[in-house]
Image (spheres, rainbow, N blue to C red):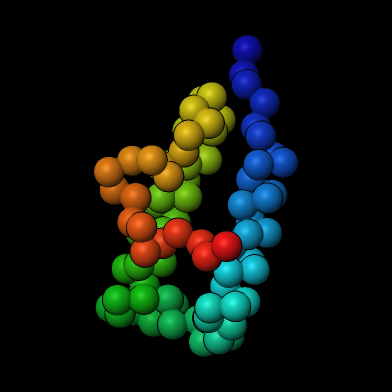
Length: 81
């Protein structure tokens, strides 16, 4: 039997990231530098996407901690407030 996906938790995280992006880097939605081949932005986009998939998979499997408490978590990535 599959476990329910915690959509409320994921939706809240999406909202938090949306607010952070609006405050910290509103240009990011429009510049789309991650689409340019062979750029650091593209590599970081894929790294972030991979981390997001790992977090979602962990939540689906019942791990409510996600990657926030792992050694690979970057303190600089924390949201302010």
